[in-house]
Each structure stands twice: as C-alpha cells, then as structure tokens.
Length: 180
Image (cartoon, rainbow, N blue to C red):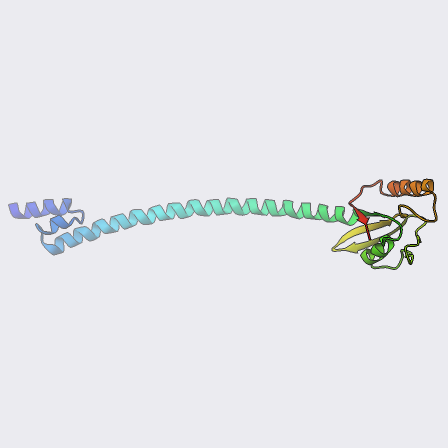
C-alpha cells in the first residue's frame, strides 16, 4: 500500500519529466505525460485562438482604413483629372531670327500652322500659337518674333515680346531657347 501511495504521489508530480520515468511504471508516467501534453496543447490552442481573434480584429480595422483611403485617393484623382483637363501648359519659344523656332513649334504641335522662313529670313511677324494634347495634357506652344529680326525695328521686336508675355498671363510651363 505504501508503494502504491508513493507511485500515486509520483504520478501527481510527474509532469512528463524524464527522471520520474525511472521510478514509476512506464505506462502510468506516459499517461501523466500525455495529460500534461494535452493541457499544454490546450493552452497553446487558446493562446493561438486569442491571437487570431486579435489579428482578425486588426485586419478588419485596417480594411476599413484602406477603404477610406481608397475613397480619398479616388476623390483626389478625380479632382486632379478635372484640373488637368482645364490646365494648359504654356511653352514659350525664344531665339534669334532663323534659328528654327517655328520649325520646332510645328514639330512639337504636330501641325504646319507656324510659318517657317528659309535661309535665316524672318517669317514670324506676330506671335503665333497652337494648342495640342500629349499624354492627356494640353500644351500651348507660343512662337515669338526672332531676336535680331531683319524686318522689324528693335522697338517692334520688344513690343511683340511684350505681347507674348501678356499671352502667358495664366502662367508659364517652360521657356525654350532655340539656338542654331
């Protein structure tokens, strides 16, 4: 009877420990070990369930935030799209007479609207402009009279340049200095 009590005592304190195996009947200790293992597994399962629940709650919150942010991005893209449609990017061409400003303007705009002179003779007497679209943006090419124009006085050239500045009062995107 004392021996049985001792075995019972060892079973209660077993906790799956290898040292206990030496003192107890192997099958009893194995049962004790398996029970301990099940208890630990149950704790692990409960812990994992808690963590998964927390993670699921975080995912739901993040999905809500992502939806809010996507709506905001869509609104901003729509607003930007409207602004881009209404925006015209002004490009001013400046250079000496005969350097190819009008030719460049025709190439950029894909037109033949700009009169081109031959042999460095000025053809542009007034500001010429054309609007075109490229990559969903509207551009306006402004061709100016040439600096050192052979057919206009210095004052007339300066007056034409002043007109060019007035035509870009809504802003200037780029100035291209055309050289030979």
